[in-house]
Amino acid sequence: MPKLFKVEGDQVVEHDDPFVALADDEAAPSPSDAVILSFARFQTEGELLLSQGVKIGVRLEPDERVEGLAYDLARVALVALAFPKFRDGRAYSAASLLRERYGFAGEVRAVGDVLRDQALLMLRCGFDAFEPADGSTADDWAHALHRFRYVYQAAADRRTPAFVARALASGAGSAA
Image (cartoon, one colour):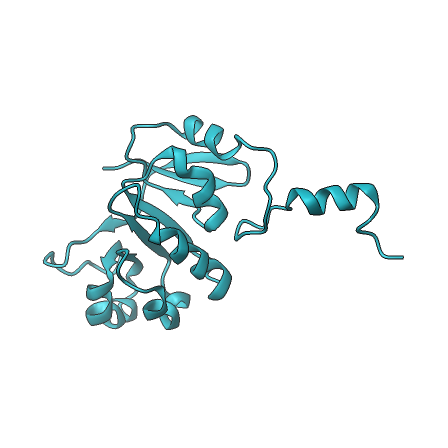
C-alpha cells in the first residue's frame, strides 16, 4: 500500500488511506467501502454506487478532461490526478481547474510518479494529498513545501504574493 501524505495547515501528515483503488474489472464494493474508480467506471457505475452510499473518489488520467467530472464534483470525496511520468504536467492544470474554476473543496490527490521536488508547485496548483513515488517521508515533504518563503504570483493555494505583501507593509495597499 502506498504512503499517503496530506497537507494540514502548515504540516504534512502521513495517513492510513481509507480509500481502495478499484480496478475496472474488480467486483463492486460494499456500501461501507471507500473506493477510487477510474473515470470510465465512474461514468458507468457511479450513480448506482453513490445511491448505495459508497464513498467515491475518481481517478483522472492526463488525457481525461476535468470538465467531464464537473457536474459530479459535489458528490465525490476526492479526485486523484495521475502523473504517469514526472515530466507530464497535465495534472497541474487539472488541479488548478478543480480548485479555481469548479470550486472543488474535496481532496485533490497526486498519484503515480509523484516526487517531492514537485511538492510546492503541486500545492500551489491545488493538490492537498500525495502518494509519493520516491520513498520520501512526511518530514521530507514538509521541508519541500516550505523551502521558499515568498511566492511571486497568485495561485490556488491563496498565498499572498511578495509584491502584495511588500505593498501592504509599506502602507501602499491601505485605503486613503
